Image 1 (cartoon, rainbow, N blue to C red):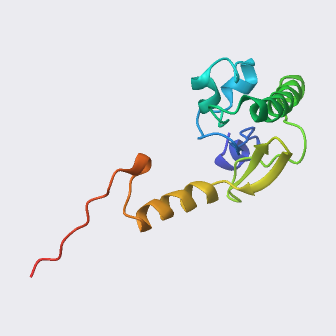
Image 2 (tube, rainbow, N blue to C red):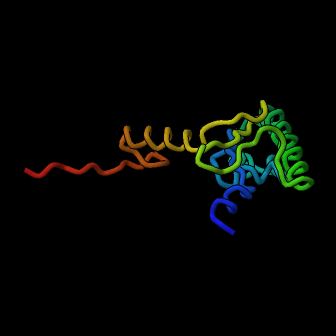
Image 3 (cartoon, one colour):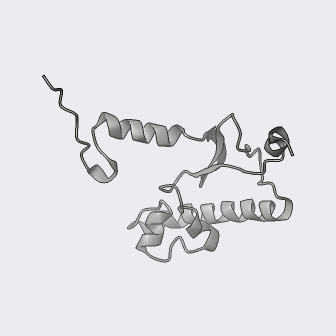
Length: 134
């Protein structure tokens, strides 16, 4: 099989959890554990303390993930106009309001650019700045 044929047969789909911190943030919605405790709420991108607001968002995300997985398991294709992983660099952003196509890396690049401009690492650690040698 040629590289072109492999690329054309690609069934990889990219998504972003608009609520959560990223990797693993979707698991609470997939398995229904998003409201089990403070850690699960945090990992899912929900408020650790405001359980009433979490309920609406969490149920909406759990329902959305149920629809996504149901479609993907049955057909191998997620619902909606889900972009495949390719040179267009698009992803599906998932939020309680639904699904939207977005640039795959925009949020991460914006976040890192903000941290670098503030000379900080994630969690507030200061990035040492090089001092010019005279």
